[in-house]
Image (cartoon, rainbow, N blue to C red; front, side, top):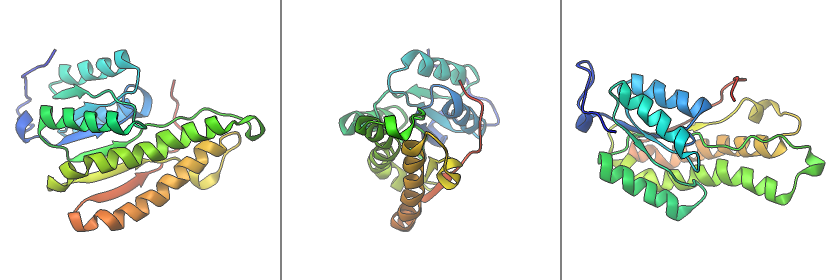
Length: 202
């Protein structure tokens, strides 16, 4: 259910900046979405398959007067990602901030790790960031405050046991951030990577 209520201290929906948060159905992604909403952003809540969780976040946002859209898509699927950005364009007409948060964090001993395990993790973290950023670029270029934020991880810098796939993916995200910052600077788009410490999640 959409709400038309707008708190008096925030701009109307048409003027609000819009943020897309991938993997926003729970844990860090949900908290990022709620934090951005408190800063006055309208939110596109991306999930892959957990539609009930995603809708719960949308309902939570709308209950506090924040315009929100459920934006389901597998971030490793180019067609799905383009469809998600088309839906955001149709619904909000703009996108100002992209938060590439979607990740896979399953622990596995290196000796037991299959190539499929390796590729699945890198696909969500790196391919997902690549596809979402590229698809979002036309909208971000039109924004006066365009920003891409990658959610990295402390272990990308310290390493961790049984997470060679995750650590490699997150370290790759750091390199991607540095390169993209150069590529997109001429568009006025900032690119940063936030590396949280240990966080209690589900």
